[in-house]
Image 1: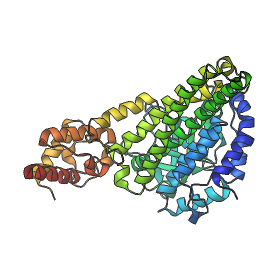
Image 2 (image 1 turned 90 degrees about the horizontal axis):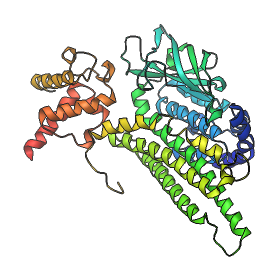
Image 3 (image 1 turned 45 degrees about the horizontal axis):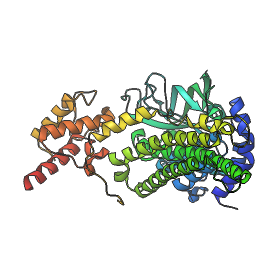
Image 4 (image 1 turned 180 degrees about the horizontal axis):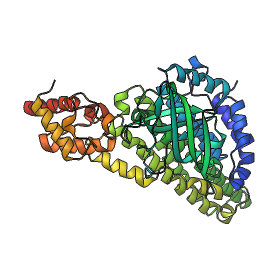
Amino acid sequence: MTSPLARARHIGSEVAARHAESVDRDARFPHEAFGALKEARLLGVMVPRAHGGDGASIADVVAICHALGQHCASTAMIYAMHQIQVACVVRHGEGSAWHRGLMERLASEQLLLASATTEAGVGGDVRSSVCAIERSGARFTLQKNASVISYGADADGILATARRAPDAPASDQSIVVVLKGDYTLERTSGWDTMGMRGTCSEGFVLRATGDIAQVLPAPYAEISAQTMLPTTHLTWAGVWLGIASDAVARARAFIRAEARRKPGTTPSGAVRLAETVNLLQLMRANIVAATHDYQRAMDSVEALTALAFAVAMNNVKIGSSQMATQVINHALLVCGLAGYRNDGPYSVTRHLRDAHSAAVMINNDRILANSAGLLLALKDEPEIFA
Amino acid sequence: MITSALGQQIRAVLNEGGTLPVDATTLGDSDDLYAVGLTSHATVNLMLGLEERFDVEFPDRLLRRRTFESVAAIGAAVTELLASKKAA
């Protein structure tokens, strides 16, 4: 069998690309792409080999997000969000028999996991919860008014955050895995948006019940700092880089076509294209460096919980989300009206609409405010090749 | 082990900044501050309060979750910083 990245590339160009327009137009779940991703066993790639997966690294997953993002941003974003959940289970569930069993099922059944972190009544702060895990013997019940559960209706399971117990403070959260059959979803809002229309990020009331063993043993604060936040920022950045890369590929094709039409002259947009390629390189370098930083820090709880690491991960999100729309704007200028059209080989309109989600998915202003707080405490300048 | 005088001063800083939703004087030295509502955001203000009270600076290597997880852990960090200040 070919490498996971090669399989993802193939599915991107042969399946996701073909249905991207209808996914976007109808704001529907990309069933075709996810059917193919499951068949190619790409949903469980992060599961360790010992549990039946491929033991893929964060870099492998970021590369797959990038490959898919070039063809269908919604497919790539759903894939990223799923892998964030898988990463939490893989990195924090090894000590729990129930979660080891889940890893095996993730690999063998290619389950798709969604996430219920945001909640009505906390003002968008995912680090505090209103709802609580209500324990009764070996069982629990949970009711969460989740303002967003992306692709909730199409997922096979959901990771939900909640207060550890009814008497725990809002910041003392746990994360619990509930699987289809454990829960019901009552839809509270739809998803008719500018872009990323296929993620179907609708609101739901989640009502779940299950075995207390389904709660991940570590506090959510730890899981969030060590795994969920870095994996989120890096995989999302991979998706955005994919979108921007395809917009630049279209601009390059446009300029090549211009150059062929008038041999011997440099097309007027060629200089702008060179500038665009430069910006794309900056964006990619930022993401690659941060991915390496995370891989280096991964085995050290000390490194992962350092404030400097949190600031660095915040920065990769802010930087790459801003850069995505900037790069695509440049590609639009290069392609001119051919880029502004909704049809044709040089259109970058869907790219631009999809990429505008980047700054508001976990709002950049919220992340900057978080960094601003952390920077009150940070003192040292890291070394360039530290 | 930290001295009770140091523990009292740390509890005073915890209460001054409104860092916790509970009264810090009701907590034991080794009680988990995160379990009673300390947030990662609040640890920044806590650190600033400790720097002000003890006239020390927390280097980046101490800016970790564990440093602030209990009165005892904070006491150990402050003791270390005070000792290195005296040595300098």
